[in-house]
Image (cartoon, rainbow, N blue to C red; front, side, top):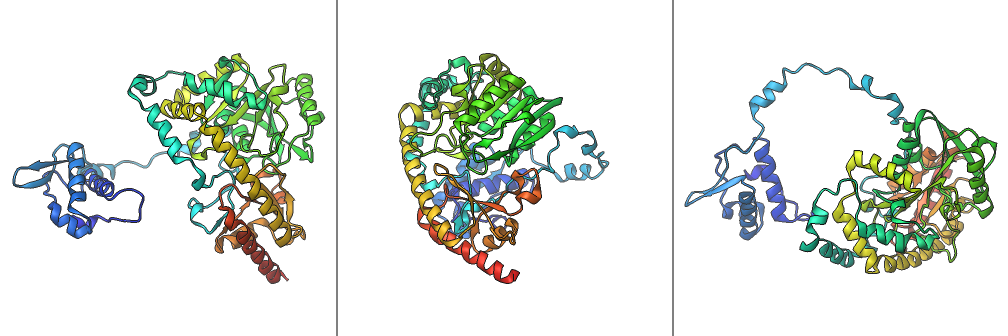
Length: 493
């Protein structure tokens, strides 16, 4: 039996859990048949180089799950009728005919695999200099505070609330916290019926696109812009138009005529970090009324924006209910939690709730209750203050080092954000070449060609983020990147 077990003491999962997981897998795969006697606790502990207590705990857990049974003075045996896969099942599958290609039946409008997105190594956190974007420095996550809020949310009194199916409803407490504590700081004052909890801004955009989309409908987005938004819009609209930006944000002109939905990131344009000017914001709202289109506003990085007085979002200026506002709790807290919210006219929120309900009913209630407690107890505000101060220091350090070590490379990177867009000023080295060479030296920077509607225009641009890398590594990492660029230029001559 031990020949099939492999224990890795460096993994975060405990030794007991590894033994339980691997034995249960062997049982369900039929490699440990019913009635098989397991090694004694002493033998298995010796073979795996773990304590006897660890093996005893693992066997007891497997016994609780009714995968093995203890027989007096005989030892542990695999239970019968576990529902394992047998050899006869596998033999039967070999006679099944080849299936017809499913791709011929799929809705072509919904297929967007050909649209690139920004990619990075899945194990980016293992690299020496991870200048990745939209991630956090895990050392800053308030583990103790979040654990306390989880404990509070798990109390017996609220068990029926978070463990039951809430149909299409959200946590009343989280809605209240968003209404009272989150939205007002952005100049937005909404009743409860105008707020919906989402699994992040991207989830909110997908719901909105489903409701507005159609083969005869046209959406418009910034160029360059968020590639995942492009995928979502293209999957739901017959046409997607691309509108250029300048130093004031999205250009507002006649090209916005005859569109149904406009997607914008006015607070912090993705990916250039440009902030839409007050003048341009009012022009966009006026155009929406004149040309009869609706606006989806992703208030990107608003929670971690460290400027003293950032401009308020479009939603705070809108008095015609032509705007759907998307926000996120994830940028400052943890992207992996996938929690966000949307604010719009009650009529739209009713439709959005119904649309969301058909997909997943509602985001997990226990997660909503935990987040509500985290906000209510002031932990979220305290975290954001620390994050903003930290991000401002990182931005200044990176900005100074980039200008010193990569002169002329800085294309965009406004104060208040966490991202710098770089490009070879001599237009000799394309971004993909630089990023691949840097990766071999332990530096992760990301090509942003997928953000451009014209791949040729975007081939020289890449981005450098400072939200996840430790501050002490920023200067050293940029120096390594500078060395990579120098070596590539020398080889290019």
